[in-house]
Amino acid sequence: MIYCVEDDANVRDIEVYALRSTGFEAEGVEGGAELFAALKKTPAELIILDVMLPGEDGLEILKKLRLNAATRSVPVIMATARGEEYDKINGLDSGADDYLVKPFGMMEMVSRVRAVLRRSNPERTERAMEFHGITIDPASHRVTANGREVTLTLKEFDLLQVFVNNRGKVFSRESLLETVWKYDYTGDARTVDVHIRRLREKIERNPAQPEFIFTKWGVGYYFTDKD
Image 1 (spheres, rainbow, N blue to C red):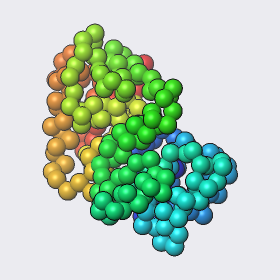
Image 2: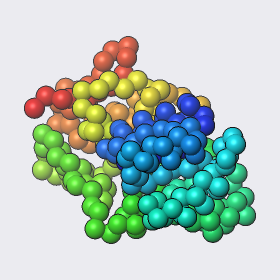
Image 3: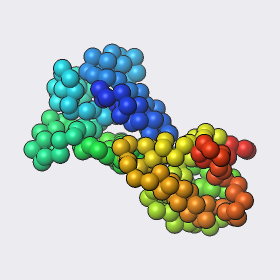
Image 4: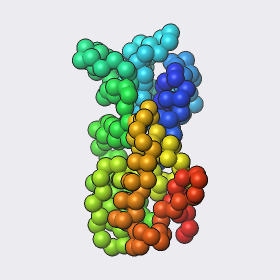
């Protein structure tokens, strides 16, 4: 279980959504009290901990985690809007394993989670996903489609992974922007359409008649769930 400790409900929900969309078990909690109550029920594989929490801040919570034998070795990624070097050093010196500076993209967060988990548990490997002729290897970032290797950009790879992990679920442009781009992305939502078109051109036999990524007109996009 990955816990996201964040007092902003919108940010917390997006973090949890991004992690679940990429295959992780995740729960969001508002602060330290809720985190420690949750840990009694379900141990953590990793914790994403906001620094600027009301009341007990993230650094105080981190110190408690490191003093507790049950949570001493749980990887912790600190998240904060303060990007000064001193703040990063303070967090890392307090026992954090990595640091995210807001605003950060959700896929950057997921990538850092994967990297920290690999470092903390070298034997942990992510399985390649296979579905109807498409193979996605998260560890090597390699994709094969219809028997040939295709080269995807980082955003194309992230989009494909979100789709395959949520087959049959319709994503609006806005939800894809929140998950794959930054949660506060303010650019043109049509950038999603461009990336979907390019992804279809690379993985579909006939992009004009897709087998995998479909459009639900007026709503968004989804990846086929047909076996």
